[in-house]
Amino acid sequence: MENLQVERTALPPFLGEARTDGRRRVIVDAGIAVQGSSNTMSAVEYLRARDIHAQVIERVLLEPHLRRSGP
Image (tube, rainbow, N blue to C red):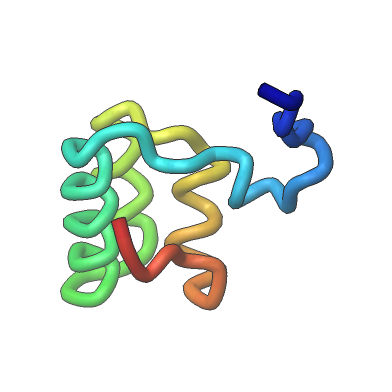
């Protein structure tokens, strides 16, 4: 089979860090809900306490247009 690998550096940062499990998706979705019902700092604290990577937290809370819409 031909080598069809794409280098991670060739992808935009948010595409190179695809979700690997449903658990983290649930946590991130809950963090977004916390932001909507409370405030951004509460959402940041919620996500940090659950070991969500800082770059993911920043993207999903501060750049909603970069959020993934599906699984």
